[in-house]
Image (cartoon, rainbow, N blue to C red):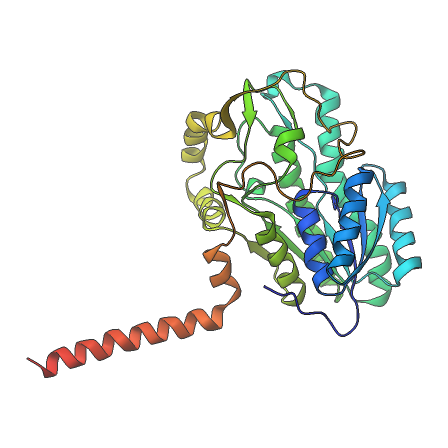
Length: 340
C-alpha cells in the first residue's frame, strides 16, 4: 500500500523481526528507506532480515533481544538511537505460543508465553515512550489479533496475552489523551497468517498445527502496518473474517463458544500426524543457525490481498465507486422509464 520512501529516513524498531510478520514488516519499511532496529532472539534470522532491508534500500542493525527481559529491550532501544537517532516508530510483534489443552499446560509454559506475547509488548512500549514522550512525537503499533476479542480453544495463554495487550493499550491511550500527548497508539488486529510459527510452536496436538482459514500472507499485514504509520487509526482490522468475528462476538458470544467447541480443534490442525519429538522455540530460538523467512508452509492456501482492508483504507475510492454504481442504477431506471 505504501512503499514510497519518506523525505527523512524514519527510525523504526521492530520486535519479532527475524521471521513471519515482523520480517515482512521490516522489508516493507526497508522499501521506504527506513533505518531499522531489528529485535529478535535468532541470529541467523536477524542477519537475513538485515540483508533484505538493505537490499530494499533501507538500513538496519540486528540486535539479538529476548523481549521478556526489559533490560535487554531497553539496551536495544539505546543502541538503535545511538546508531540511527530518535525512534519514530516502534512495532511490537514478538510472540510465543503453545498449542495445548489448558488442562495439560505447565505453569512455566504459560508464564513464558505471557512474558513474551504480553509483557514483551509492555516493555517495548515502555522503552518507546521513554524516548517519544519528551519529544512529544512518535507512533507505537501493537500487532494484535482477532483473538484479542474472540478466544479460541488450545491457545489459552496466547489468547490471554492478546486480550491483555488490548486492555493495556486502551488504558495507556486514555492517559496519553489526558496528557494531550502527540504520541499515537494503534492496535492492528490480524487474521490467520502464513508464518513459520506453526512449524516451530510447541504443540501437544496429535496432528500438525495450522492457522485457522482463511489465511493471509504476511505481506498483507506489512502493508497495513506501513499504511497505519502514515494514516493514524485507533485500531485497524485486517480481513473480512476478522471484522465479522470481532463484531459478531459483541452480540453472540455464547454462540461463538458453542461453535468453537465444535470446530476449534479440527480447524487448527492439518491432516498430517505431528512429530512428538520436534523442536520448538518457546525457550530457545530455532533460527540461530537457519533462516526461516517470512512465510510458513501454507503458501498455496494463503491470500495475497484483503478486499476488506483495501475498502477500509480507501474510503474515498469506495465512495466514488458507490456513487458511480448508484448513478448507473438511477440512469438505467430513468432510461427504462423513457423506453416504456
